[in-house]
Amino acid sequence: MNLPTVEAALARMLAQVAPLDAEDVMLARTDGRRLGAPVKAGRDQPPFDASAMDGWAVRSADVREGATLRIVGESVAGRGLDLAIARGETARIFTGAPLPPGTDRVVIQEEVDRRGDIAVFKATTSASRHVRRRGCDFRGGETLLEAGTRMNPWRLALAASAGAALLRCARRPRVAILATGDELVEPGGPAGPDQIYNSGAPSLAAFVARHGGAPQVLVPSGDDQAAIAVAAAAATFDVLVTIGGASVGDHDLVKPALRDLGAVLHVEGVAMRPGKPVWFATLPDGRAVLGLPGNPASALVCAELFLAAILAKQQGGEVGDRFETMVLSGILPANGPRVHYIRAHSAPGPDGVRRVTPFANQDTSLVTIMAAANALIRRLPHAPAVADGEPVSVLAPTP
Image (spheres, helix red, strand yellow):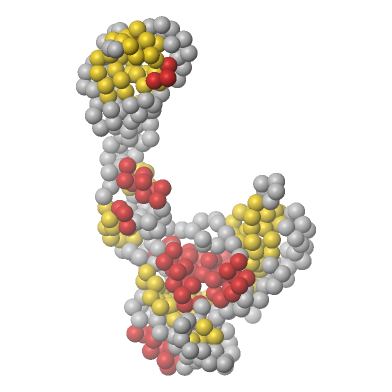
């Protein structure tokens, strides 16, 4: 069976995904959301020529060693001096305050001696003007943030500086998460001798929230095709993410259950490791279903590669190229026919260069390794062996 590459599989998935509608969101609540419309500046920033330092607002022609200027007032942030400064005059000014009319320069306070109502200029006066020109940050009408941009505290500050109280944001994708398998019990509950705790659903819920989605963890379903179909049919979602039951064994019943609901499969396996059994389908009403393998590492690797991109598109954006080159610490053997994402740990070396060290044991059931990893080394199909100190392609998972 010829399985699609990661890139081809993702393209098939995204072809079935459409952006959701948008809504107005209070500025302070937009962190992690994606913009549904651009943010434009309503005016220049700063809206006036402003002082970059505490000092004295002057006319450049008046500044020379030993010059004495008459102090006629002061300009402070939020309360400027509405008085034209004439020749031979100066005004006290503070950082962020508007320059009074007639002035074009600020001399810092360390370079001036004040003697009553007279300012005496020293010989060490700097040539710098210490002025932030009107509109030096942005101009009125300028697009500051494009639609699809994912908001963070830095971008939120930019929108706030433009005076935006509400931002048009894409609606959060509703993501239902259904873990399957008779072996699963919920953390905190009693576990039988043949059972394990459900680590997949809570970790995927956190992943969804970090990518702007609204997760809902469904009551886990055992290995019961009818029960899986009932749980999926009853849930409200834009994306259904199933965990486990993704392969072709006698107890892998998720795909048959979704077919009972009319799902059409667009991806059924991908040429990758871990995560080969991952699949993608759409229901008759167009809603998406992403089937992830049951092993925690496989599920999260597939989430990084596929679910993040699906959620981004539903919010009008894209994840972009998240791979970077790092120096390998250790050795890697030649790779096989599938792209391999190797859990690893990256950190700066003694020389300041960031190095990445693969974990020796890549068993996808090991949650300790998954928790310790902060990088995935990408090994392309049939890639040759890599020696210590050579470059490798690395994906940093969602922090």
